[in-house]
Length: 187
Image 1 (cartoon, rainbow, N blue to C red):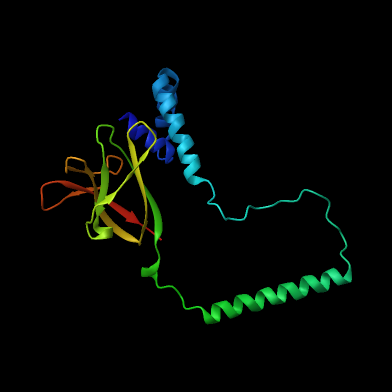
Image 2: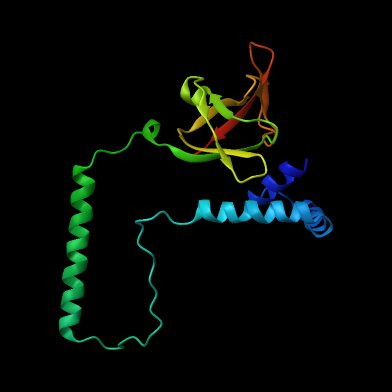
């Protein structure tokens, strides 16, 4: 329950009452607080901009209230060139089909007693994909690009057992007597 609570807190899936309980738990239990802070730092690093992105720059200086006529001409020419470029790109670029779109989804599971973890699901033909350790407390993660639609999946432990995602409530039984989690990726 503690691991699920941390995961739900990080993913902002708690209501106000659950957040109050979470804060009280963090206040009362130093180990829980340390684990939560460590995972929040990891989440911050995962959400950081990727290298190569151009940072946004904001200028907080005075703006020239009356640009000269030349500046207006350059601005107009630049605007027309940009508009022409956009029209050209829209005209020459084929439209993406809806089925070609994929969306990143981060799977995270707490499995402290396993040496390896993998994920398998309908999104990859039920092939086993190894997961990476996230931190030192037993969390495993993988980031996958998924097409829109419903996907069934489960985690595979090092002993071959399959387990459903404990943070996903929607599940269904498979033909082998185990449960799969159901994830709905929406556009």
